Length: 227
Image 1 (cartoon, rainbow, N blue to C red):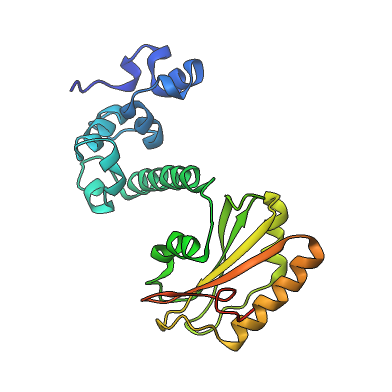
Image 2 (spheres, rainbow, N blue to C red):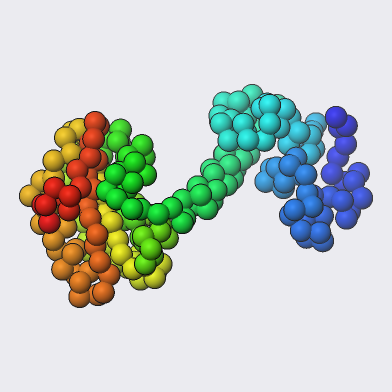
């Protein structure tokens, strides 16, 4: 590792200028991180700090698990720089997850339950999620629409269908968790689902099901004939 300063690097090889001239794919991992850091410290350039961040993990994939404390233990990395790095890592993970999720086909209620369960099963508040599908029941998008209290989620149909039109979907499956652990739908859950189905019919977007996730299982309202 060479402890050189950015200003000592030829201008067209400095990370920011290199990206502008050659595009992001031409930069090394440490050059991309150096751009996120923006500046170095008194004794270290941004490139050196970037190299030290990469040395904290065995490979680039493992960087996704680096912690705030691990970053702060690198001399020259303050809280602001550490948070910038963590935010960039999280954004990359979310982009990757979106690419992986888009196109998954939901063929049955259990497919949907398995797709969503790990995300919501242990949450302490109710999360109401819309899953938006194309004509072949492939996922176009997934969005958490509302977060409620432990026993109540206030759901507005306009938000559910606003996302539907945004993604040009053919149908919707809605899901939420019961922090109590019991997936049995409440009267409010059933009433809301029927209302969404009525609105969906008017708009030409079918609400296929409402999946309720508990700690040890799920209930499909359509499968169990609640709707």
